[in-house]
Every structure is written in structure tokens, then in C-alpha cells.
Length: 512
Image 1 (cartoon, rainbow, N blue to C red):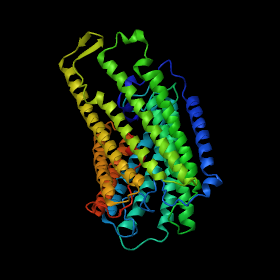
Image 2 (cartoon, rainbow, N blue to C red):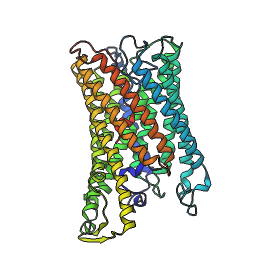
Image 3 (cartoon, rainbow, N blue to C red):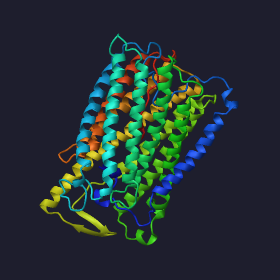
Image 4 (tube, rainbow, N blue to C red):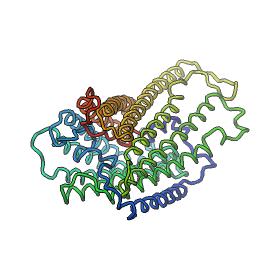
């Protein structure tokens, strides 16, 4: 239920600290401040002095790099409506995975909407959590997630209808734009419902890391939803494909999405400086800390520090993109891609901070309780439990190793794209580097997702997140097929003009 407790804490250790204030007010204050600042920037960029500048026709929403309905990108620049076997295969396989995920979320809703599964007196087999107040948020999350997965499946099948056959569906772009708007609205609602689960301090499932993650999710989905509304108005009312110079929906979406990421960056900095890093600990407590406890503190400090860098980089990319959508002129695509490349590198650092504990510190039958003092229990049952725990650690190590490599591949892909945009050399050699790296990112995401399922899709399965992992398997395969198809069109052609649209990376590709 808690997304592996952010990779660093066992269930028993997720407890609120006495020094932490209730988080609702800091979240609201940070979000309002960030929204106000970015709204001011957006209004400035949308002013007549900017609007009178040269027409900007190449700025595309992060989730809209391809022409609808093929919004994943990696399609032909010319003849984007033509039959495309790679896109066809990817969309069909991914739609099956997300349909299975939607079915699993029904099971999750049946369990997590049941009030008899909450409370202190519930048996361990039936228990969801002792905190009864979590039920509305978790139940809403499951329902909204189910609706989102159905919309995702519909979008993929709509794309497959275009890529798999010669016969084209009339008004398919309008249909997909509306479906995408619904999908993102369900996605934003899902993240918003979880804020009340993970953010209040008084709950026993409070997690600052997951709270920040959900703030990010609301911002990302809200941005994409408003962009979808703009696309719906554009495709359903006209046959215009290009994003106009002043795209109000995307302009507002990028501003509020950026505000959420500014808030998330501030919360990461606050958490690291005031609670997680070694400098924030009581000096009297440091004397008796074991080496493993010090490693854990350092790992969490690195986790929140790199998280602050990642969220700030994504906020920067959204502000840059807002400049384009709100009417400014200039090469904003260059800054956007470079900022997202930096975000992916920071995401790799986040994954490595977790790997420091998951991959290097296996459990043993002797534990250091205080500095220099050990307690050993090397009996048969204890050894059996330790071996079982170390098997889980190895799976988690594989999961975060795959995540780190995925982030590095995404960084190379986006930096290659940025190099093309910043130097204005729109050639196949840059595209080839980006697409090959994108294929590797999809492969490593597949490794990550499969490793997740080995942990969370067992007999005592974590229903909601197991369904997410199955969907991620489909998403990784979809990206791989798009990237491979694009690479086959562009690799080996040197400095000739680029032939495929750039790839589009979803939010999960920037998270460890």
C-alpha cells in the first residue's frame, strides 16, 4: 500500500517524528506561493510585447510530442498517419497490460473500500491499515486509478487503429484528445485522493517522501489535463495540427504544473535540511549511532537532496515550456530538453542513494544495537528469516539498479535531443543517439517493472501497486517498440534531416 516505503524503511519504521509539523499548511502555503510566482511569469510572457514576436510553431506539450492519436512520439515526421508496425505492436501489447491493470484495481477497490478491513482489531490477513481515516482516500484512489487505466487502454487502441491498418477512423484526433483529457483528470484525482492518506502527520502511514511524490503527481497530471483540453478544442473544432502561438490550456497547465514542482522541491529541501541530513540530528544522539544507522541517515539525506534537484529541474522545464505556450518567442525547446535531461540525472542519483542500502548491506544474524555492541541470534529459524529477507533485498536491488540505468538512458536521450535543438542541427545522427538511448530506457524500465512485480504481486499482493507494475511493463514495451522503429529510420543516415518525431517520456521515467 505504501510503494515499498520509499525504498528505505520497513513498515514498522514508518512513524512520524515529534518535530514534524502537520504538513497540510506547509503544502498549501508552498503551492500557493509557487502558483503566484509562476502565474506572474506566465502573465508577463503572455503580454502583447511577447505576443507580437515571431510565430512559434514548434513548441509541443511534453505529453503531446507526436500528432494525435500517436502521442508517444517516435513516429514519422512526414506521413505520421501511415501504417507503422513498431507503433502498432507497442500499442497493442501495452493496451493489454493496462487492461489487466484496470481489472486488478477492481479487486483493490473491493478490498480497500471495505470498512471492516480497517482498525486495530482486524486480523493481519484482512488488515489494510489501522488508520480508519485512510479508507476514503485509498478507495477513491483505486476507483480513479481504474478509470484512468481504462482511458489509457482506449487511447492505446485508438493509436493502434491508426498505426495497424490502412483504413483511418474519421475524427480520431478529436476522439483521442478527449480521451486523454479524461485520462489525465482521473490521474490528477487519483494523486489528490492520496494526499489525505500520506500527508497528515497524525496517521500511522504518514510518509513525507510519498507525500511529496503525490504533490508532484497532481502537478504533472493537471498540466497534461489542461493541455488535453486545448488539444480537444483544436482537433474537434478545426483540422489544425500545430500548437498555436498562444495555447491557453497548455500555458495555464505548465504554470500550475511548475508551481506543484516548485512546492515539491521546497518540501524536499525542507525535509533534508531540517530532519533527514546528519547536520539536522541531535549531536547527543550521533555518538551512539551504529554505522548502518549513519548510512541510513546519509542515504535519506542524499535521497531528498537529489529529489530537490530533480523536482526543481522539472519545474524549470515547465516554466521554459510555459514561455512558449504563453506566447513568447525563442528556442524554448532547447532549455526544456536540457532541464529534463538534468532531471533524469538527478533521478539516477535518487536511485543510487537507495541502492547504497539495498545492494551493499545484506542482513546477518548479528546486529549492531549501539556503537560497538552486537546482539546475535544465529539459530535455525532466525537464519531462515534472514535468508528470506535477503532475497527481498536482492530483488529490490535489481529494481533500483534498473531504475538508475533507466534514468541514465533517459538523460542521454534528452540531452541528445537538446543538443540538436540548441545547435539547430535537426539531423539523424542526434536523433539516432536519442532513439537508441530511448530503447535502452524502455528496456531498463522493463527490468525495473518486472523486479517490482516479484515483490508486490505475490500471495500477499499489494493490489493497487501490483496493478501499476503490470501497466508499467506494457508502457516499457511500448516505448521500446517506438524507439526501435524510430532508430531504424534515422540511424546510419549521418547529417541528413531527422525523419522521426522525438520520443515523449511520461512521469515515471523521471522517478526512481
